[in-house]
Length: 367
Image (cartoon, rainbow, N blue to C red):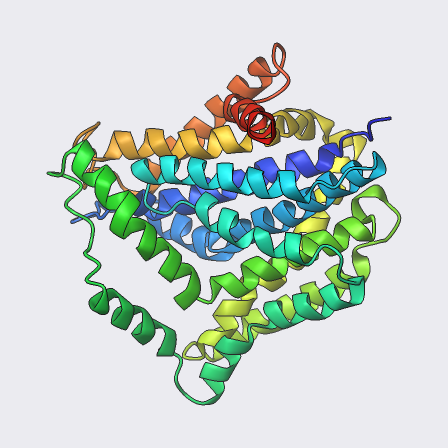
């Protein structure tokens, strides 16, 4: 018998997608802006970006990735099947979606997930306490802590610059004058390497793997099925987050506080969000968001493709013409359109467009 879908997870996934979209919009979808017009709301939006969006929803996505892996493995094992081979093939296909997406947008996370997604597969049979230890080590950010303690907080940036110079990685061509083909070629060559190196030198890779493992742990403990409460983790994380924010304000030159602050935020914010979406009084919002959450692959790829096409010179040519408020407003409108489109689409189909292709290619490849 098929286990029921956990709808609150879909709603949280849709919220994470919104946060990632807003973070991308604040950064103009990684399109260089020679001159950014100022708007009246830019200061407020910039503050919200730092407090709410910077790094945080990317980590929620990472947690949900680890949780989804566990749920797929667990449900397959309940049928007497080993899902690891199929999941590895799904990761290969995800890398293909990532390369397709990278052609349009330099800043893709799908390829990164596809590469690091093999780690949960390798650790599937590890005891839970091993996963807890590994997760804690990753989330503490040991390399960043070490560099701050010995007074070399720029060590990873210097490493990145050295690699870039050694392998002659070029910067992106002008988004105003480059053609669609030239920009796409740079994105899937130099741009992909820039993205992969950024994940390493920014220490993001540690938090990403830690969140993968935390998702697996939450799945094993049946947190989203109500068997174990998330409060023992959420309450200390909330207190720790407040302390780190205070330290970050008091000692702005210590980069370590800014590196671990997003992780602590997610550890208390995500359980609170899931609990909120489970309440009957919130179903007016959780239900439609859940539909979008079932189409996150489609929405993630298409929203970046459309926004880049609108901004770049070979498309809508809005480079240098949009304020921060303008580009974030456009992204918000696009999210609402996607929300309506997903709810309409799932009235007639079981999966989103790219989700359906992903599922079909998974089965086709295994045959």
